[in-house]
Image (cartoon, rainbow, N blue to C red):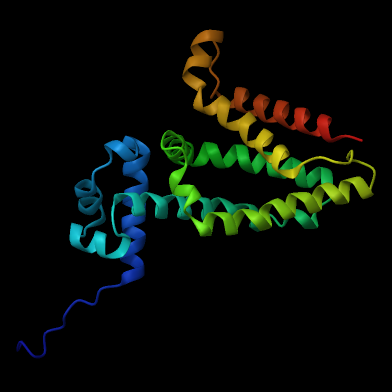
Length: 212
């Protein structure tokens, strides 16, 4: 085959970015922002460091991109449920279940948040994309609450942001502290029965608070 007829591999920027983000997510989740190494990320992604810097700038920019991608994935999971089309109580029930099951399925999400908090969320504060994602999310929860008030099943004047922080906190604290809590209370907190019991408990707590 002549040199002229030989095909040069075509770089696919989207696939390259996706490989970098996946490798970076795992690296940041395992080692935190401080301990993560760009060399390892590039090696796992199958690219050289020059290309990584070309797509994402520096390590802090890459961490911001990983946070954005993971928040976007979580928001997409919530949108897929079309909660605003459900009866209000069922919508809240499904939001609680989704939040709980998402943290169980993607434990790296919580470790990424822990790392972001260690750096005082400076990467989140600088991200317009994350703020844009959460504005419609809060509006969706408010719409569900308003519908519940109109149907006289929810009490009025519930702050949608405070409500979601409570839902997320009830899940994330349990999972982030599973080892210490299991040791203290001598319980296997991630046994199937314990996880089912936790979801029922969280749902009862939130719906009891909302009930008119």
